Every structure is written in C-alpha cells, then in structure tokens.
Length: 200
Image 1 (tube, one colour):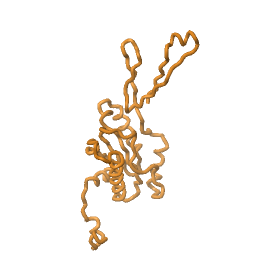
Image 2 (cartoon, rainbow, N blue to C red):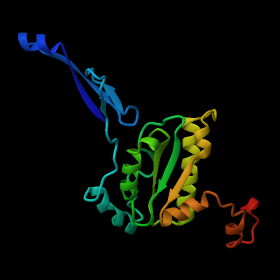
Image 3 (cartoon, rainbow, N blue to C red):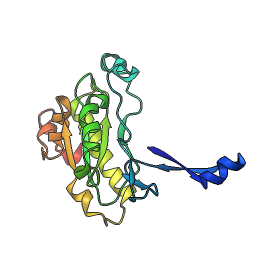
Image 4 (cartoon, rainbow, N blue to C red):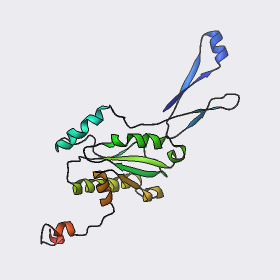
C-alpha cells in the first residue's frame, strides 16, 4: 500500500504551531496514482503491492519438513487469494511442486503484479497442499477447491472472467494441473477392482 499525508493550510499551521492533516491509504491493487495538488496536477505513484516472501523467510524452511511428514501439512492448505476477489479480473491459479510452497512463485508474482498492463486484468490465487499425499488426492482437493470458491464468490455465474480461469503448475503441481482437464472415466477404478463403479 501507499500512505499519503495531506497537511491542511501549511502556512497557517506553521505560523500558529498547529498543523492539521490526514493520512490517505491506497491499496496497490486498486489505485496506482493519487492527486497531490501540485501546480502541474502531479500525481503520486503507488508502487508495488502485496508480495510473496523472498528467500530467507521462515516459509522456505518448512517445505522439506512438510514433505517428509504426512502428519505435518502446510498451513494453511487449500486455495488462497492474495487479494480480496476482484470481479472481472482473470484468476491465475499457481500450483507449486514437490517439497515446495507458494513462496516458489514469489519472483514471478511480484514482477507481474507490478506490470501496469497485467495488474488490472489478472488476480493471483495460490494452491498449497501436502506434496507427500497421493497425486490423485491432491488433484481432487484442487478440483474441489476451485469448484467451492466459484460457488462462494459468484453463485449466480455473473463473472465471465471465472470461465477463463488459468491454472499453472510446476513439477508435481503440473501433474495436478493436468488432471484438472483429464477425464479418466472409470479407468483408475477398473485397475483395482472388477466391481462396477456404480456398485462400489
């Protein structure tokens, strides 16, 4: 965010020793400029926005531990939004890989959020999961998370941007992403039992 201090009637305030003002706060994902009242109608620019942690933050230390212990899932698990839902912006869902976390996307997210052409068109969502779980289980969690969030934020289906959702995965996350568009039918079921799926 950017904080702007506006001081009212500076000359009088200095002369009387009684300066008055107010602070305006601008979220980087909703405003990029603010009028500052200069002679040329200058505008103060708000840089940056919520950033993912770079290397050296504690989240990086938890990746291997979470992978080696199925009983120590990442916190929090599931689909996370970096900002409140913004209707009309294309969701880009990032799915990390094995022994990893959403922090691995830090560089690309931080760069793209500061791109003036993309900033107003996309919103980042992050999917985090225990990478020691079976891939099909994690893919099921991802699918259910996407379906659930769609019902929560747009129950009437009014936002066409949600129909163009993009899912990007790295490593194991790529396998989960691929399974979002894979129709396996009953093949997985048939490989372990002769009982028809409908009777299982």
